[in-house]
Amino acid sequence: MSIESHGHEHEMEPQYGLPERLPAGEKILWQGSPDFHAMALRVFHLRKVALYFALLLLLRAALVVADGGSLVDALLALAWPLPLALTALAALSSLAWMTARTAVYTLTDKRLVMRIGIVLTLTFNIPLRSLQSAALRSAHDDIGDIVVQLAGPDHIAFLHLWPHARPWHVARPEPMLRTVADAPRVAALLSQAWAAQRGARTAATPLQATAAPSPAPNLTPPGQEAPRAEALNRPNPWQASPT
Image 1: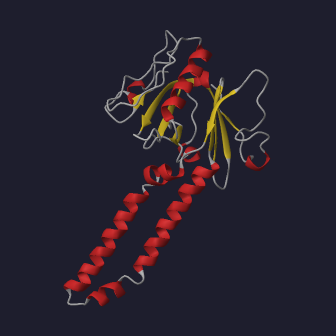
Image 2: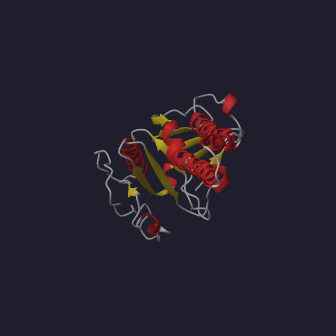
Image 3: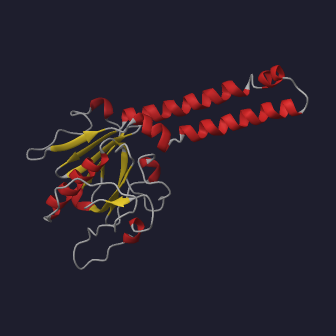
């Protein structure tokens, strides 16, 4: 398996989201970027961080009142921590916006291309034939995450991928398309493209999100052991795509 990284080339890319123009015979099946609002809430946990700061501010005001201070004293006690909290939330929102704005995912009939990075832009070419498995986590609004597991010994460093990587899988990073709109349809396209590359047959029906995950697909050629196939079989919100 060969995973290509074309380094910093965003400013000079000849085709949007791609390090080079597609060769003859290869076509784009889908191209998209992360949804900013879902990225901020689900990946950077903006709502949880805001709630955390709100509880800290409320606790500070309550302590002032408990010590005999007035309501005005409680408000004055928030004069410096409140702007700091708002600044932190604004910084987190900006990071989510830049992450979503600079990332482009491209699915062709031969590969999956991830152009990611804010300051240093990296582009990764992942041949579809090098995928071992894939899985989908889709929310009620059909904005979901699609994670792919790479076969063979090669892998992409977790820090190079983050936040476009499956959380907590550091030793064996798994690339992830984060907060993709219409995620079930994209997962179905990925499934069909992978099957075409491997010469397999696949159903053409879109993938539907369910509460219980399906068994992980086995993309390993006959006669070879599928490494870490149990990773997508554990009870969790991940539903295996029909790849």
